[in-house]
Structure formats: C-alpha cells, structure tokens
Length: 112
Image (cartoon, rainbow, N blue to C red; front, side, top):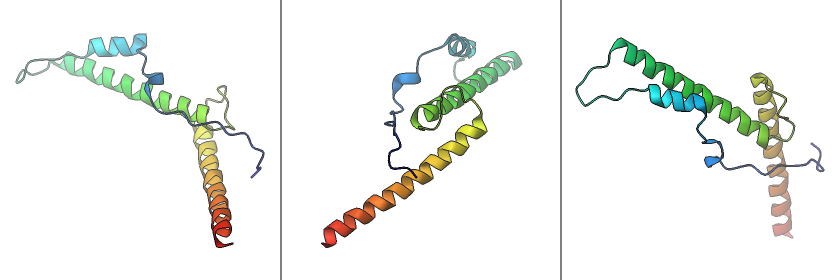
C-alpha cells in the first residue's frame, strides 16, 4: 500500500457517543421494573423487548459511525454496512502488513 497514505488516529470508545437521544430516553422510559417476584404483563414484556431492540440497533449504528471515523478510506456519506465492513477489513490487513514491515526494519536495525 501507499506509504504516503494519511492515517487518522483511532478514537477511544469513550463517552463520545453516549449521549441520550430522544429514542433512547423513550426506550428507557418504556422499560418496566417490578419488585422481585412480580411477573410482567404481556404489554410490559413487549415494551421491554422493543426498548432492548432499539438500544441494540443504536449500538450497532454507533459502531458503524466509529468505523467511519477510524478507517481513512471511508466518508460519512458512505452508509452501506457491507462497504464499511469491507473497507475496514482491507484497512486492518493493510495495518498488519505495515506492522510486519516495521518489525522487519526494527529486527534488521538490531542485528547491525
């Protein structure tokens, strides 16, 4: 790959995407908590399931957004999940190859 390629620093999965959106607030409010031993009604179970599914989808979207920020060949306008995964794999392979080259250079320098 090209040595002049521009690299972005990976961002830590800190609290940058932990803001509560209106959807996550609704999901949290929809969850029902009961005292120990009390059974949930079917409507409460359904509400909990919907809230959990919305949270799962939001976490997946956040993960794709983070990949778009980290992988230099991706732009925010590229929202195809297949493309994001493909370019992420290519970038990881590139980084592994670059690492091997650098390790070889370090080993050569140490042997001289």
